Image (cartoon, rainbow over the protein chains, first blue to last red):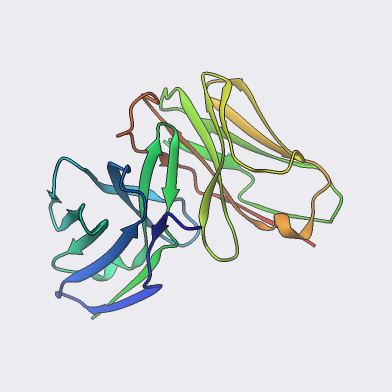
Length: 111
Length: 115
């Protein structure tokens, strides 16, 4: 039973446009979320996080939005660049020492 | 300098063999993990160690035995390998395990193929 869901396995966006990656979770007790980015043959790297006391966190071109009532978060990348092409994992931390990941969304940014 | 390093990067072995994957972190973190990414690309936690002590052990066959000789190392030993063990295994580390809002740093992964 997946507690963190990324229902879009892939997303294709034109360079310069906005990329929106979505994530849903099932447990309303989750209160900290992270996005990781993964290139082929590399480990995931931390991108951005958000605590449930916020509804938005911004870091450069990356913004994460959290809607607690809908148990939904999204990652916005503006403007999208070809180097952003990767797999993006949403994750939640229900307990210390334990990350639960979604299945990932493969983003392709084309010129 | 690599923060979390795993060896080997690729491992091909026959069913029934015993193999180990090594992991080292130079970040001074207290907590280390093993994650498995299966054929469906799900990343799932297997084990978590804090200061050489096991604190999370998900439902993993006892053929998998993690060993932490010190807090900078967490090795994964797998006995009697099966075809279903084929996956990419990621080691990770983090600081402040008592806090929820701690990101984990991942190694580059070990692709294990059992034939």
